[in-house]
Length: 186
Image (cartoon, rainbow, N blue to C red; front, side, top):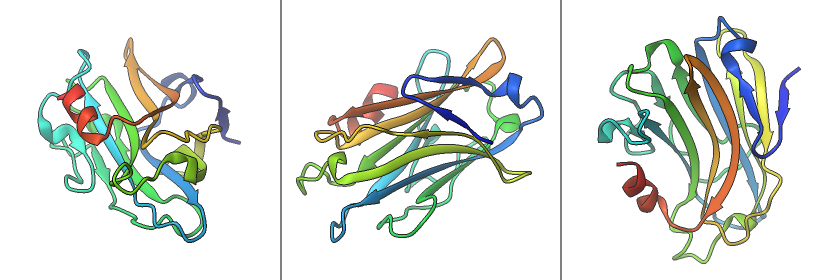
């Protein structure tokens, strides 16, 4: 049975799953009927200083694969229609560049400000980590807040601390835009 986290919750992947190497990060959400929301998952692969070692470690719909080959975005789902994960990020922890100490996962609303859209129009949002080899869900964080003013939400972080990978359930909504995230971590 998967671990269910609350906002701010932490889970030590390395201790609980010592053989784990390949995961996929599933992100899902539902939108109000008739609303045309385009949500985009992005990954910031950060060094120990909290910065991208180089621009190509920012993974999103226009850069689907990290330079080390460890993280790959499977593509943009522009509607969010259907059951299950809406966007997937594949990660091979054993292939990560030695400079990477954190993997930050965000979801932004494409042109949310211009279209007067926000995460208050999104329901049942979640992030989950799945063991690729066994297809077993390891953990899940259901975002319990509505975020009525946010146009982007930090769903979670994988952070390396003392050679151990931890998942942190973030659930932080902002309305700064994707470019502000890029500027912050570049």
